[in-house]
Image (cartoon, one colour):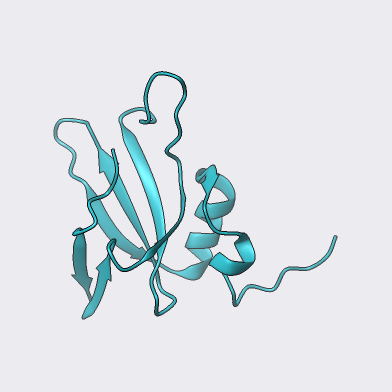
Length: 102
């Protein structure tokens, strides 16, 4: 269950496209039997212009796949908490975020 590369949506006159964005994190991983988490997967993308959006895919009857923009704070929260598979390091995914040393 992967988002189609031609999946595109225009929101507030901004085009969000899976085909031109970078996948930075998702919750899709092989558990030895399947890729799906309870029939749903979430994918977080960053556009070339620095905007973030989420694609949610579902296998449940009555639910629809969705693509919607999120702000940087929500994208960071998803990257840190809900999405276990990271494809881009935090600093590259969120170049404007300040990271403090512990």
